[in-house]
Image 1 (cartoon, one colour):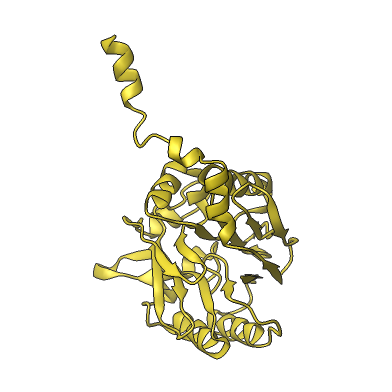
Image 2 (cartoon, rainbow, N blue to C red):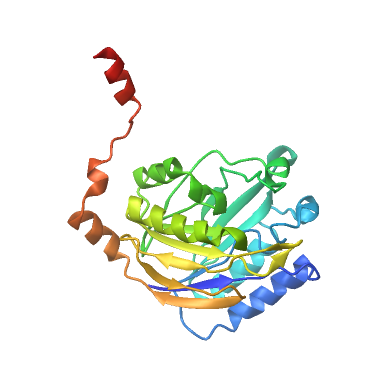
Length: 270
């Protein structure tokens, strides 16, 4: 399986329509045949451009999805378009990630459950999601989380219960917490025995420097590839069968309890 991590910058001076067109052209010009392309979180609007969220919100039939669906069809590959500010029901806005199949149709969607409030207006502007799903693909069962979700291992446990083998993580992770990005992507891959395919934004949004360093981590916690900080497309080949092999060789997930809360209760009762 060949993966392309499209680490996109969202300069303050670039309009959303111009950026969508630039990224579409960038992906069209990719010379290598790939099975999956992954983009960052909210790259079309730029994560830290909070004043533009409502104006740039779109439905799942909007310009970002349509432009990237064209790429999926032209290249006959899967494309995870990162996420968009979705115009949801009753005027609500959500941070929604979308995976498109080779025919350009949506095969998986995920609205970010843990919206970020620390030094960010995301939690003020966007409603959290409330469900997780997985999707079968030729490479295995795929799920997604978004950026801040990396910090919540309970969510990842639920993804494994739902059958996840590859978890795609679009992000807009800041440079000042790059060490956390590296630690958490490796930890989530290792403790859940999944591939973590994490694509981060680059450049500067509204005065905030993004970390870049998109990476793929295998089920043993080993880094397969890592980009640098700048805008780039990084290619890597992975073997999805490693997930099953790892779980069979070192069956830690079989020893994981579904609920640990009974431990304290048992101590009290004893």
